[in-house]
Amino acid sequence: MYFKQITVGHMGNFAYLFGCEETKEAGIVDPAFNIEKLIETAVNDGYKIKYIFTTHGHFDHAGGHKTVAERTGAKIIAHKKEAAILKNKNIPVDIEVEDQDEIKVGKVTVKIIHTPGHTAGGICLLIDNQKLLTGDTLFVGDCGRTDLAGGSSAELYRSINEKLKVLRNDIEVYPGHSYGGSKSTIGHEKATNQTMKCKTLREFEELP
Image (cartoon, rainbow, N blue to C red; front, side, top):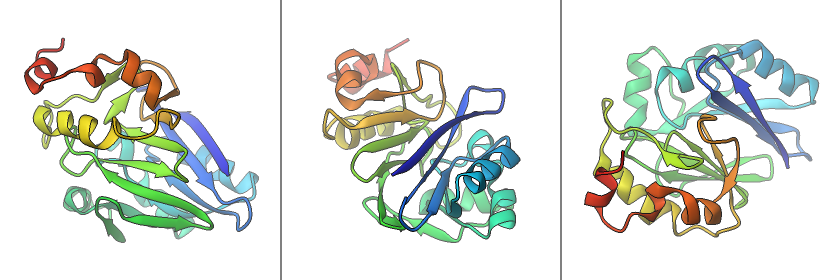
């Protein structure tokens, strides 16, 4: 599988390119900044961007969607609860997804995991059951904030415990920002990340 983590912008953001080595179809995740660099990387590597995946609708993750779509013809994908937010920002959503939906990028399978908490329609992307792109749901050593519009500590606590902690320990974690690092695993985060070790919602809400 083709896979690249690319640092973009001035806020420690990561964008991602991934694709099928056989069909040369690719997906791009959260292209908010450095759009030319991202598109050129895919083209130079021999890939055509077919889908634009949205982990959530904040500007530092979705700000470049419309430009990428116009330049490449790629379809924009977002959770149905995030679609209205994007459309209000004049970002069209072509495919609205729900929890456990699957999208094929060539022969690569992307499973949608709805993880509300940072936003109502936030999602993580499980690629070929190997790599988990977590957006602002989970960082290396921490989790996303819940004090912005659509955020909920209770929802994020449930997302972490019911959706992420149940995944295999060897699944690789790739966050939306470089705050604590660029890569981890579910097992390592379960052992070291304080937000994944909380036993109760109250304990989670009292974290600094």
